[in-house]
Amino acid sequence: MPHALTELSLAEVTRPAGQGSEPPHEIRADVCVVGAGIAGLSAAIESARLHRDVVLVDSLPLIGGQMVHSLIGLFCGVFGNGPEYRQLTHGIFDDIFRDLGPAGDLHFQPGHTKTVYYNEVALGRWLERTIRSLGVKTVLGTVLQRADLTDGRMTGIELASRYGNVTIAAHGFVDASGDAALTWQAGLPCWVPERPIYGSQQVIVENVDESHKPDWGEIDALLAARGDEHGLLRRGGLAFFFPGRGTAVLNVTHIEAPLDPVAASRAQFDGRDQADTVIALLRSEFPKAFGEARVRAYGYPGRRQTRWIKGRHQLTTDQVRHGTWFEDAVARTAWPIELHDRSDGYVWEMFGPDHVHYVPLRAIRALRAAACHDPAGRAQPGGGRPVRGRRRRRAVQRAGDGPVRRHGRGCRACAGPGGPGQRARRRPGPAARPADRERGRK
Image 1 (cartoon, one colour):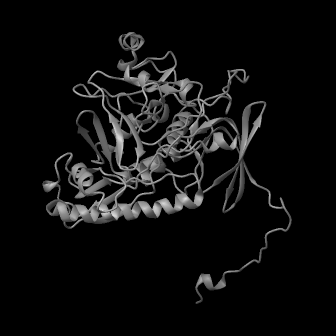
Image 2 (cartoon, helix red, strand yellow; image 1 turned 90 degrees about the horizontal axis):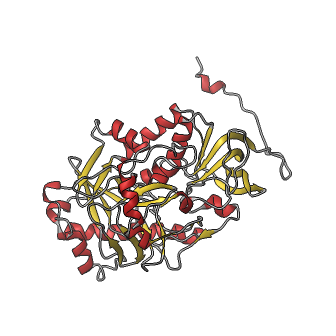
Image 3 (cartoon, rainbow, N blue to C red; image 1 turned 30 degrees about the vertical axis):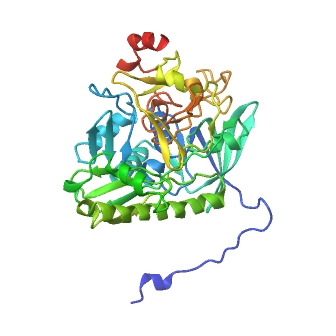
């Protein structure tokens, strides 16, 4: 009896000739989110929970962005500084903590602040199940080709995919691309840093003996002392040990983060070379902890500041240091001032135990990149809220009166209420109540 596959019939096909002969795939939605990292996923999930029809777009063939695929493995800025460790960010984090904590896929590490280690595989699957359960449509593995503006309002985008072009029309758009790709394509104002801001090549090593792990600061000191002789760009770094796993996430490199496609590809290889050099050095200097260590996975290149939306308000370091409260505050965190603008080091300015600083909506909103609508469907002046989600770190300028650019994993603008379609009117938590407001105005 012949196998069924031997009877398979074939049909010859040829792409129609002529420009525009192949019609694009057309999608309509209430909200289109460009970028499927923590910022975009938060916006998509919150919008879908408000019964909006949502389509989520990303250039990768899978969701999760740097949060999952750069192997960062660490949430920062969700909690305030000790001794209270107040949770400053809610929204999607409440759900992640509720569902992944009991399974042992989270580890809460108290220190000056409280950070959260996570299992990136478990988190990635949780995100996939969540958006599917909410009916969020995904269009992955695409490249943004065009953004349409009509009377200052974004009305549609066109994407290229291996399956043909895709057009998306929506009432509102969220730019969570990580490098203001949507805003830039629309011809709206963006910022770029005056000097390079370095990214990182994260790597997970296995066969690590946690019982002999170096004390806090020992890896930093080793790389500072011997980094030059080994050709390392970054002269410091950290290892995050997930208890009981025999693994560590190494954040020990600096790599360039150019917007040029050829240079960006080259930077990925350079980053892996840097990571390999550090691992060899750790094996020789800390043999009890890292003597048998080997690479389990290299993450996608982590990128910090490349290009971002020029909002209506640019935070300053003084406003961050003084915890200035804003009437339109949608984000709060206590994470230190951090800037990776030197290849061999970085700025790290910590705050006291009662410090909280805020992000106004004006700082994360492009001038007219999208449109908010009232119940009657009329566009509101000034456009909507294309939130540009950033990496896990907040990077700011050195000067006391210089501009601050900070979004990320611990930022409510990126990962909790306040973004497009999110619960922006939720009552402020403890850190945003009148006592904090009065302190911020001083």
